[in-house]
Image 1: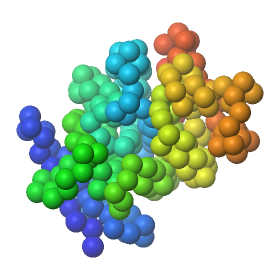
Image 2 (image 1 turned 135 degrees about the horizontal axis):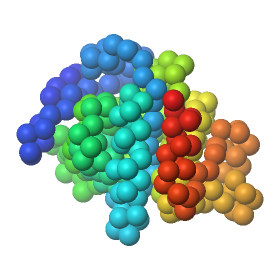
Image 3 (image 1 turned 60 degrees about the horizontal axis):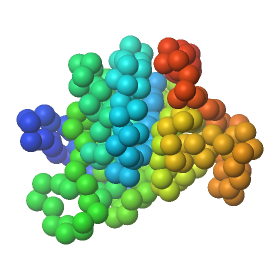
Image 4 (image 1 turned 90 degrees about the vertical axis):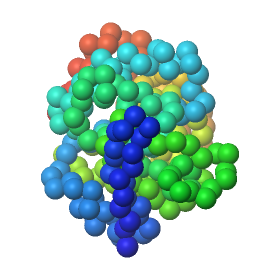
Length: 244
C-alpha cells in the first residue's frame, strides 16, 4: 500500500509525498498524488552535493532564465532527485524566483532522505529540496537506488508527449541516470561545459574521451550535446524546439 503524507518545510511551504514500495504500485501512486492528465516532461540529472560553488554560480542563470521559464510556458512537469543540493536546489529556487506553477517532482530513495520522525542516523541522508510540489519516495538506502525510478516515472506521466533528460554536471551516479534514461528510450541532452560527467559525455560524443560506460550511450543515438558556451537564447531555442 502506498503511504501518502504532507511534508511541511521550515518556511511553511508544503509538498505532497508518497512512499512507493513496489514497481507495479506506480500507477496508483500517481493517481494518489492527484495527477489526472499527461504532461511533456523534463528530467534533470547531474551534480548534487559535490558540485562546486563556481559551477553553481555559473549554472544559476541557466535555471532562472531558461529552464524554469520553459517549464512554465510549455506546461512541463519537471523531475529530479529531490534533495536540497546542486541542480535540485537550483531548479527549486528558479521556480520560486519566477513564481512558477509547473509541477516539480523529486524522486528519491527513502533511506537517503531526512523525514519527520525518521529513525535513521546515517550521516549521508539529505534534506528534501524546498519549492518542490511533490516527492515520490522509492525503495533503497543508497544514493543511486532511485535511478531506474527517476528514469521510468516520467514516461508514465508524459504518455507519448515529449520527454527529455537534461544532464548538467554530475558525478558517478549520473552515469547510472543516463544509462537508465537511454534504456527508457528517452532523448538525453548533455549540457557540455557544465562540468564533470556532462563534459565527459560530451567529449565521448566527439571521440575525445573513451569509457566503456559511454560507448552504448553514444551508439544509442539518443544523446545530443548543447554547449553552455552558446548564447543563452540559442540554448533556450534548442530546448524549446525539442520540448514543444
